[in-house]
Image 1 (cartoon, rainbow, N blue to C red):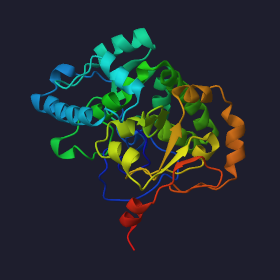
Image 2 (cartoon, rainbow, N blue to C red):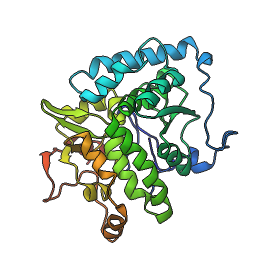
Image 3 (tube, helix red, strand yellow):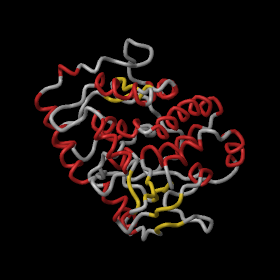
Image 4 (tube, one colour):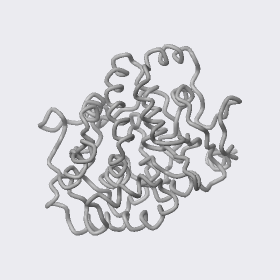
Length: 312
């Protein structure tokens, strides 16, 4: 998950501050201030045998409560991915076993990293179908809030969707696009696409809206807020609109963008973003809760949650 400097990543709906993204997010540990690992690609050994019983217990607690919540909320592709991966409640998954299944199905693998990694490293991994996952797990007192994505967010939230060929191809294309956007100085625009899809995207199914974004799927409280609460907007996905829209990095999203199918994401990978970057560079950013006359509004939110947080 991406986040700007010095601001916490809110993963499960509890935060003490309020803010929006206004500059390119950083994938790096304090934007590279931390000492990098010995390997140039920032990968480390998962060290699966070193996990303690207490750490496995935290995983089990998170896994079981989220698994009880997601039926009827997560999209069919997420449910199918969970069913077909070696992932369960009793222990933190072994990245090697996950990768064996992913490699056979979509050519992806999971690689362990110490936390957030620099932009260029992150994009290089994605471009080569390697998903960098934090190998640490949050403390028991951090079940609903932590500053970096841990193994539960990265594996439970992201990895099941990597079994879907459309999302698998889209994330690789995002990695390639990220390398280019970084060179062009427009990474903030592209990062919003990732945020509002891979992290906080909703999908329209025949029986209603469903979750596919990892930031929602791994969040106990946002899994409810994103689908059930009257406060947020739910708007049909439009690429330029999303690229202009700032997002929340510290609290529930004010707007969720809805795709009609995962095929829609794959179609984005064939678009030349260059002209889009040029077209929106002179346009002002949109606030996270903005609703435009041109929007395909599925649900116009009341905004009551964030209004209460801002106070009088």
